[in-house]
Image 1 (cartoon, rainbow, N blue to C red):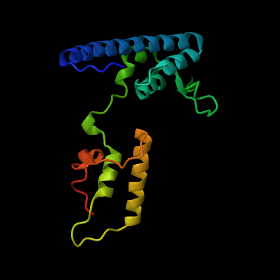
Image 2 (image 1 turned 120 degrees about the vertical axis):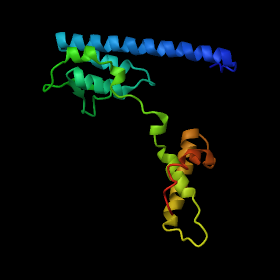
Image 3 (image 1 turned 120 degrees about the horizontal axis):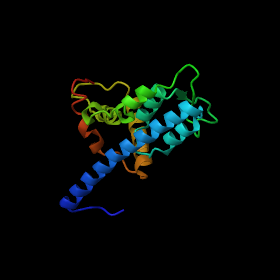
Image 4 (image 1 turned 180 degrees about the vertical axis):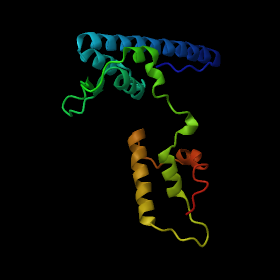
Length: 183
């Protein structure tokens, strides 16, 4: 993979990728809507499963799941032996809603949260665990604190493929969230 280091080239590439992403959203809408029509006509859920399992790793599967279960007359497959390759099955209690499927884009069903609406639970816990008591304060459950720090170290190693200590960078954004928390 080539890293783009020039700002002008990078800006141009980002804009091109944005256009492609919007085109792909539209294409997945067309494919999913076609699959729903096919299912309504032929009763074969396999084509819906093919659409879902063909989404890329970066796709918003939650949005597609909500769209399919709302409009396609399917439900999630709960059979542990088959749900990996057959994520949806016909829902006998639902009807296919072609009008609703046509009127609503799958990518609008479960919009991603804005960055400031996402809580970094790891950073919050690590910030609290690294907090030192003020002079005269006593630390309750210090053994639990040590276990949390050890778990964070193991987690960091697993995520990074390394065995180094967790860095303070992981906790930098947790200050606001913990401003009202006391020891």
